[in-house]
Image 1: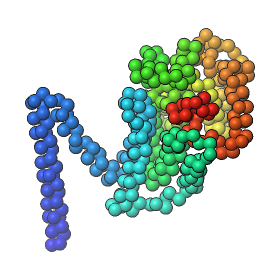
Image 2: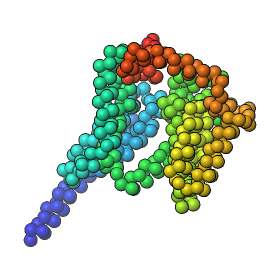
Image 3: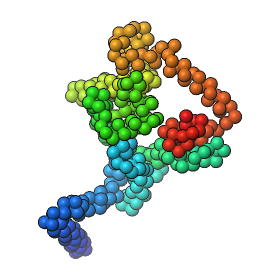
Image 4: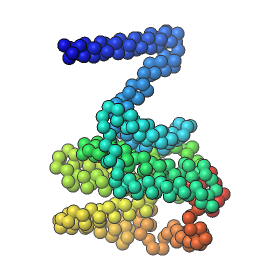
Amino acid sequence: MNQSTEISSFNKQNTMTLIVIASVFTLLLGTAILFFSNDNLVLGISVLLIPIPFIYFYIIFKYPRVSFISVLYCNYFAVGLSRYIPAPVGLTVDAMLLLTLITVIFSQFNHKVEWKQVARDYTYFTIAWFIMTVLQLFNPEVVSREAWFYAMRAYALYSVLTVPLVYLIFNKPKDLDLLINLCLWFTVLAILKGLMQKYVGVDRWEQQWLNQPGNFRTHILFGQLRVFSFFSDAGTYGGSMGYFGVLFIVLGIHDTRRRKKTIYFIVGIMSLYAMLISGTRSAIAVPLTGFVIYTVLTKKFKVMLLLGGIVFAIFFFFKYTTIGQGNYDIRRMRSAFDDDNASLNVRKENRKLFADYLRTRPFGGGVGSAGNWGMRFTPNTFLAQ
């Protein structure tokens, strides 16, 4: 009797919920049709889009993993979108990370959250690093605390939020498979965008970004574009593509499915080509080191012999031959192996300057004092220049 009463109450509750939802959607649809009939297309579409954020929030509070996956999307595309949208799009990563943490906290009302999963060495390491970064606020050499706020997000905030969330809600083998598949498609899009910039040209928004003094000086060399795709700069793009080149080639070696193996090898090789057209010479160290470490970890003589031979062949090709010297991308990458390279000599001189600078500054010049944030907030300082 009690069970049938509970079922009846549950059915009534669901029926009322459906009636309310249907009524709201009917009202929104009617309002949109009214706007459309008056030739007000923008308002009509806006009314139809109203339910989307509510549906999204309902889903993420029910399934926090969806919110974490959203973080991955935001993190990968936010910088590229900031060139097209005149707004602090990068802050969406911060907002989504905090939102994901909130959804995890609230999800414990539906099921038990295993907070003890967070108690790992890597979590403690990220917390210690975050504390050190916060203490940099009191560094006497800091010239812009606003620059610190923007820079510390990528340096420390993201890791101190992401690591615990991974241990809590993204910790199963299927999650690793999902991450690999997402990275696969992200990498394909990054490669395609890079190829468009190389062979079709940049669009007008990317050109506006390139026209900024610091970006033009570092991304247009001898009339040649250093491809950056939708990343923050060519250096980040090149290093990332080198990393994914190693990842997908290794996955291709071990995957037994022919279709997957083929896809992994193609994406891996194209990633290495994307690294090449980025013009980031230091990025060559990523695949060379990655493959060397992989061959050691496999402890398989045949694999060590094969990949060891490939790595040596690549090194020999760039260091001791002039094959392909007529190609700008190969010529630039080969210059990384030249001991008498002008850029290398400049870096050596810069090391001496930094050594003198740091001799009286044991805590450095402050987070955000160099690089893009330095150029933005304190352009006339030593580190920014």
